[in-house]
Structures are given as C-alpha cells and as structure tokens.
Image (tube, rainbow, N blue to C red; front, side):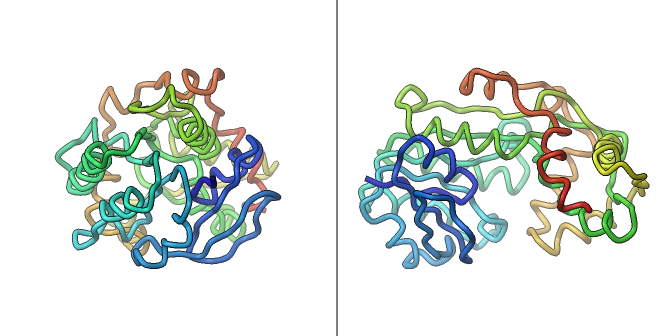
Amino acid sequence: MPVSACVSCAPSLAEAGELVRAVSRHAVPMPDGVRHVTADLAELTSLTPALDGAKALFLLLSGDLHAPEARPADIIGLAAASGVRRVVLLSSQGVATRPLGPSRVAMRAVEDALRESGVDWAVLRPGGFASNALAWAESVRTQGTVAAPFGDVGVPVIDPADIAEVAAACLLDDRHTGGVYELTGPEVITPRQQAEAIAFALGSPVRFHELTRDEAKATMTRFVPAELADDTLDIISAPTPAELRIGPDVERVLGRAPRPFDGWVARNIAAFR
C-alpha cells in the first residue's frame, strides 16, 4: 500500500522501498519510485486520488491553510475516512512555546483533531527553517545583500532534510506512534551569521541590511497571513529559553546530530550564485 507525502520526504520513503505518492499543487520532477499527484489541500475533493489506498500520510499545511477561515482538520477526517491508518503532522514549536498566538491556537486545534481521529499519529514541531534563507537568494545574486530583521538575534534553525527524514521514520516505524518531536538545528545562529555562511560558501562578500519589524512584516504578508507573520516575528525578535534550546529529538529519532546551517548552504549554494 502506498504512502502519501509532500514532495520533501518522498525520497527518504522511496529509498526505504515504499510506494510513494508525492502531492503538490504543481508538477515537479520526482525521483525513481515516486508517483506525483497534483492536488490542493484547500480543495478536499482533489485529494481523493492521493489518499485512495494509502496507508499513511505526511501532512504539511500551506500558508493559506493557516488563515482564519480555513479548515485544515477536515483533511485529517478525509484521510481517516479513506482508510489511512497513520498521519504524521508537521506542526510548529510555537504550539508549545507560544500557545496563545493566533496561528498557534489554530495549529493546536489541528493537533487535537489528529489525536481524536482514531488513526495512529505523530506530531513534528520544528522551529525556524534553514530554507527560509532562500528568501534572500535573489538579493544575494543581484545585489550581494541579505536583508532581514533582528540581525543579531539567533535561533537554532533546522535543515528541512532532517525534518523529512524524521517524518519518514515516523511514517514507517510503529515506535513513533503518539510521539511529539521538537526539531531544531544543532546551534543557535543569527541572520547576520547566516549571511556570513552564505558569503563563505560563495567565496564573495555578502552585505547584511537590517530591516525594521514593519518592513519585514510587509514582505512576509505577501506569502502568509498577517497573524502568522506576527507570530513568527514575535519569536525571532525575542526567543524564549525554550525556543533557544537545542532539541534532542532529531538525534533521538535518526541516531545522529542535526545538520548545521552551513551544510544546508553548501547543498543549496547554486540558488545564491
């Protein structure tokens, strides 16, 4: 029986010998052994081909499904009704560290719906993503500049490849049923230090320009709801001790330390050239 997953964790599942359906809104190249299904999480009827006969589902919600009028928990209900036996949900560290933020309240409701669904489940709660640095790719290529707020405030950003591998493990191994995993990188790193890591990998200077909070929010709300932008900016401007903690769960699940930011940069440096 196949596993339905987002594109990011499909390679790990395919390497484990699973039949994989990778789901995204638009067609993208797939590795061998992975079937692509075009669907939109906001349109439940489009998910039927992806869920038909699937035994497990990795659920990563897009930004628009964090909007107040969205009903992402309906996806879990549809998966259960379709016979999916296990769902791994990509949630957020902020559900635990900032439970009163509007987007965190909504995500907690999705977690609760999953727990009550009757399927086996696991929840992943990552902090900041290393891949958020791709938002700087164009300005690095064209201007040699990284623009970001709170330049000297760091958090332990995680490589999405580590999230994908943890998700695959949780989809395949019964030992992770009922687990809630906090996923972080191995070190606290500031935006200014991230810019320095990109410059080192490029072998050329990258200037850091510090944005105001309002400037950063204006950029972010082009892609995510304002409530989610505010919640994110609250964290990266003044992380709590819990948000600065290096979590043990990547190593607990994978048996190795999480990848550092400079490793993510090295694998993705072509985006910045």
